[in-house]
Length: 110
Ligand SMILES: [Cu+2]
Image (cartoon, rainbow, N blue to C red; front, side, top):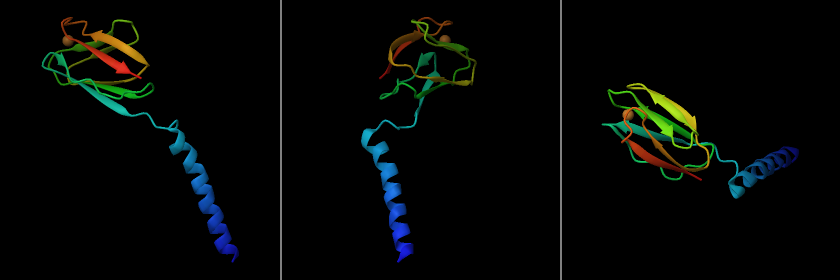
């Protein structure tokens, strides 16, 4: 009898801990979004990026590139084959490559 009471109490504690995180959605872990740079262009922009998520910039080209925000919020140098991680800040940010200014894209972070 005491054993089953302890088990039930344990189950209740488990559920009590789990419900607030899933119900409010505030405890979501940061996600990683990959942006590939290849053939002198930024690949498709990830959808659903939230503030605090990780952006992983991956350069598949044989040239050095950068991802340089026009508002100065990030400036990532990408050697050939390199990958660099940054943390997403909220906003809509246009960015370009310092070495090839015609390479441009816009990242949306909610
Ligand atoms: Cu470039």
